[in-house]
Length: 267
Ligand SMILES: [Zn+2]
Image 1 (cartoon, rainbow, N blue to C red):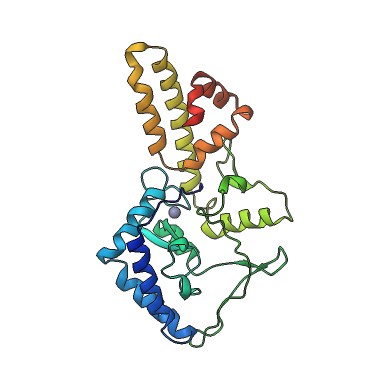
Image 2: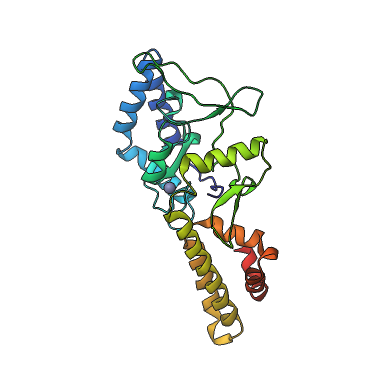
């Protein structure tokens, strides 16, 4: 997970979203608004006027349209950061949209842990009555939002051994809770394929840097460095590259690889 660069949305599309949101907001009580949110999103999502939303979300993904959470699988599901089943008032809110893969979307589902007001303890909201639901309590969100948060400030990736994440902040802090809860809810460490994928990407980046270093020493291969740069930017798991740059002084092979291609620090 890395911070998603915000892509613009045309005024016309924003107006469409606002109009559809108005239909949901006017549907009646909270239970009726949840039902309307589900139905209207199912209806609008495949329609032509919604397509610019998908194009903008795709432009915000890293690599070749990778999921904004795991950065491994292809992003093909519009993910509501605040679930539409809990927050019908945000079902068509552009700022609430992410692009995610089916695995991440399914894991997160309607889970949306919150901080109890004024504290660092987490409220696990549970709906006790699906026929007469009540809104979630007010509180700051716990899960990292790649639109708003810089995941690198919260997550540290082990590039030497496990290729798993851990929290940057010490235990007992809000930052630690946000990082560990995000890792847990999305299964960023426990899904076997994810650490394996990050390890493969790391090895690929090291090889790419060696190739770029060789190419920049040979004038007949001058175009190759640009190709390597493009390849690095298209690989999945963008956080691996960012972490390699951040931690290069701690890992001798990474330090040596960047020293041979110093401009790669700007890639
Ligand atoms: Zn994912």
